[in-house]
Every structure is written in C-alpha cells, then in structure tokens.
Image (cartoon, rainbow, N blue to C red; front, side, top):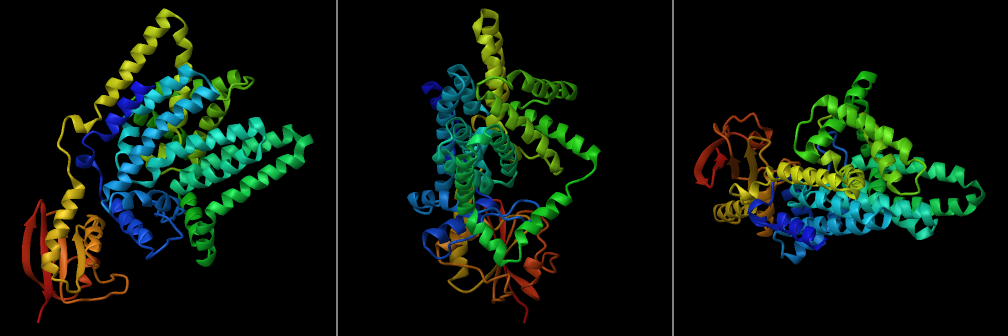
Length: 471
C-alpha cells in the first residue's frame, strides 16, 4: 500500500505547476475564494452547472478556500489541495474497503485509483467535481455503517456527506435516490424498531438540510429559480423510452471508456451490463457489503437514463469509486490459484499500459497557465495606469477570469459589465485571428460604444488591444 501511495503521489504531483489547469472556471473560483478569505463576500450559492444554469451549493468554495490562503493567494493552492485530497482518497479507499470487504479488493482497487488517468487528471486541478470520488466513498461508507450499527452518528454523517456530495455535483442526487430506497427497505424489514429508526432518519434529514440550507434559502429568496432551472433541465433531457434505453447503454459505454481508456466493442459492453445485473442475484443474500456497492452502482446507472446530454468524464465521478471496487472484488477471486494470479497480473499490467498513454507530463511541455495569466496581468497593470477600464476577450468563449483574478490582486477591477459602466479605455485580449474588436459581434466589446484602436501589443500567444472612444 505504501508503494501504491508513492506511485499515486508521484503521478499527481510530478511537474504539477507546469500542467495545472487555470482556465475560466478556475479563475472565477479563485476570485470568489479570495473574496471569502478577505470577508468581502460570503456566497450562499456555489458554481453553476455547465448546462441549464443550475447553481450548486457553496460547500466547495468554503472547503477549498483555506488552500488559497495557505499559498498566499497563488491559485496553485486550491489545485494542490484537490491533489492532496485525491491522494488521501487512495488511502481512505484502502482502509474502508479492507474493513468492509477484504484486503485483496482494497489493494487492487487502490491501485486502479492510483494509476487511473481519469482520476489523476481530475486530481491535478481545482474544480468542484474533482473531490466527488472521495466524498462519494465516504457517503457510502457512513451509509453502510448506519445500517449495520443503527447508531445515530453514522446517520448524521451520512446526511452531511450526502449534502456535500450533491453540492459538488448534481449527479450525486442519484446517490440520494439509491440510498433512500435502501433506507425504505430497512424500515420495512425492521418495523419493530420503527421509533429508533425514525429518530435516526430525522437526524440524517436534519443534517442534510442544515448543510444544504444556504442553497435552500437562496432558492426561497429567488422564487425557486434554481429548482425551476433544474426541472427544466430534466424535462429537456429526452423523455421517450428509446432515448432512455440509449442513455442507459451510452452511460455504461462511456464509463468503460473513461475508466480503461479503450473503446470496447459495444456488444461486449452490453454483455458486461448483463453480467453486472446478473451478479445481483448471487450477492443479494451475502452478508458482505459488496452488495451495497453493486446495488448502488446498478441503480445509479439506471437513474442516469434521466440525463441525455453529453457524457463528459466528470459526470461519472460518483461511479468510478464503485466501479473500481467492483472490478477489484471480482478479480480477487482469481488470486486463489496460479493461473488466476497470471490473469490478474495481465489485467493489471494492461490497465497500467492503457492509462500510461494518457499521462501527458511524461511526453509534452506544460502550458504554464498560471504563470501565463500572471504575466499578462503584470503587463496590463502598467498599461491601465491605475485608471478605470473596461475589459473583454475575443472570441467570447475565451475565458477572461484568470487574468481578472491577478488584476484583482493588484486592486484593479474592470468596470461592471452588468451595470453597463463605460470608461475611457477598454482592453481586449484576443486569442484568435482575425480579432474582431471594431464593430464586433460580441456585446462584451461593442457595449463600449464607437471606438478606435489606440495600441496593440503582443505577449505570449495573445494580442492585447487598447480601445478608446472616437472623437
């Protein structure tokens, strides 16, 4: 396990700063974290989802903010915190799976997590879904312990960590549904102890609502804006039966692709689905908690049929912890004989080889996004001359937040675009030719009014335009 941790740590921190992602989401988050630390603004909502403009809870911001302070407002701090928690996740997985299932499964699943390229990639930059595997596993662990012991504090922890998981990404809501089904079954099965069980359930619900309360209060104050957007998102996700069947198979297909970095034959994927659901009948009567992992995994895959959008890697963050444990569990049966050990060795070696192809820091130069953003901001500081200014980028989807973060550290904030504040100068960062800064189709630029180009500079691979008003 020490060797696995060392490998996992090396793969997460090797050439870390050079390859850290610092794009629009990270720049936006860094600004919010900085304002939390300085007590300028304490948000009640978290980041918005990429589609549907549904806001998450603020847990991620408050949880990761201390790392920005520890690193003296260098945005590599939150990324370092995420990487460290990813390393802790490997260790937590080992102890939890060793306790719940067995040591062989714990070691194998920890190895998969340590070298999995999708796990490593998510560990090497700051983003709210990247913490989800750790919180998913802890939520499931506290849930299993609550059923085994019926102790109130495990229910309290389940409620809290379920809230944290959902605030990291809304796809963790599928955990809420699956866990709810188990608790309902547990209540029916142990109806004689209904009073104690209902008390424990009340503790769980209270804790869940308490830690979700900032988002709930925000929704109440804004006429259920968040809830309405979320329901609209579900309505537009495809309601036909055939589309749900396709979503089901696509979800499992892409889960395998991201987990193993290989395009499997679709018929083989369908066969795997059949095996996973068939295995429910064999583990149902087992006392081993593996049945909880298998049930939650299968039910979550089924619930994902509700979402018909693109299947990005981070959408499966609640499934990776379950999938790697299940694969390790089934492989562990082969360690009882010589040929089985060879089979497991070949599988593990193949897994490592496939994931090795996705480690860019061994082959390429990093983009040094943090250094680049800081260098551009340092250059702009001199040109702004401590005067009020407007700011925009071209193309529109070229993120401006990383540069605005470093400008904010220098107490240079652009005029408010929302309030349509117009100054005497505008700076436009352009990453693509032709740079349409005059008569631009972008409202972010054209809102400045009739303008002419005063100066053009080039720094790194960017062009910087200074616009002034025409006389």
